[in-house]
Structures are given as C-alpha cells and as structure tokens.
Length: 184
Image (cartoon, rainbow, N blue to C red; front, side, top):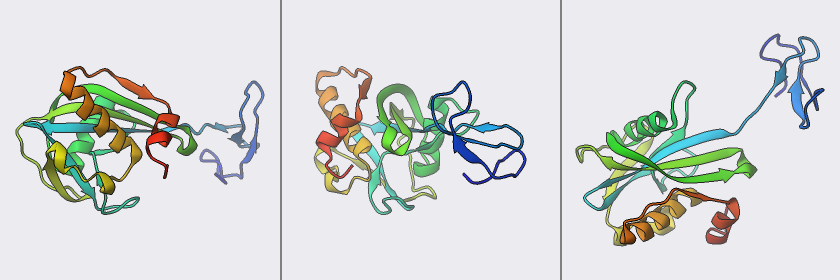
C-alpha cells in the first residue's frame, strides 16, 4: 500500500500506538489501514456418489482441476459465498451445505472453507471461470492435475470419511498440507 484510501496522502508502515503489529498508517489523517486474511469459500458438490470438479479458465493454475470456490464478498455469509461460487464456476445449484474443511494458510494470508453439498438437480455447465466441469467417480479423479493442495486434501478426507459415513469438520494446520503436498 502506498497511498491512503481516505485522503490520498502517502502512508508509512509502523506499529500504531496501542497495537503490536506493523500497519499502514496515514500521518496526514491518522487512518490505520488494517489488512486481514482473505476468505475462500467453496463446495464439494456430489451427485450420485460422483464429485463435481471444474477445470480452471483463469490464473493461478489455469487448466488444473479444482472444487468450485472463490473469495468471499462483503455482505455474504460463508454459505452464501460457497453457493455463489458454485453457481458462477459450475452453473450448479447446491443444497444441504455442511461445513467440512477449514485450512489456515498464513503464508499467503488466506483461509479456505469447503462445504459438503449435494447438487440440487444434477445440472451443471462451465461458468466464465471454468474451461469445463465434470462429475468424477473416485477412481477417475485427476489427482496429478489438481490446482491446489487444499482441494486435494479436502477430496482425500471426503473419500476416506464417506467409507465410514462420518464427516467431522476438519481444521488442519498448514503443516498437514505441507506433509501431503511438497510444492506448497
């Protein structure tokens, strides 16, 4: 950040009085600009035991497969964001959403939340941010072509959990992802 969004003057980075972290501060209008993690909300949509994945049409990781997900917007709940992203990326409606995985990625200032969900009617199509959208049986998931470690780990957990039909909410530390995915 270089300029204050309140008055347009240059900002400096320092620890404000009463705080313990460096922040961008405008010495002209005294505004403290807080920068907080971005929340990514998405779904693991299922239709008749198959999982819906989207091939990304945008960077990062264009051409790789992912679960429908994206940045939460102001004024949205997590569930509303997950539904919206599923509609935008896969033209699919989902129901019975239940929070499933939560991953903190402090090194990139993001928090990922995936909901288990059922496709409402089995209909889907590629949205603007997807090259294609497809339902996958467990044996056909393109593991080596998944876009993000959070997606791979969510799928691994889901496939293991559905064998026992128990789906606890999983909140794994970043180290668990790093152990599974060396390129993180």
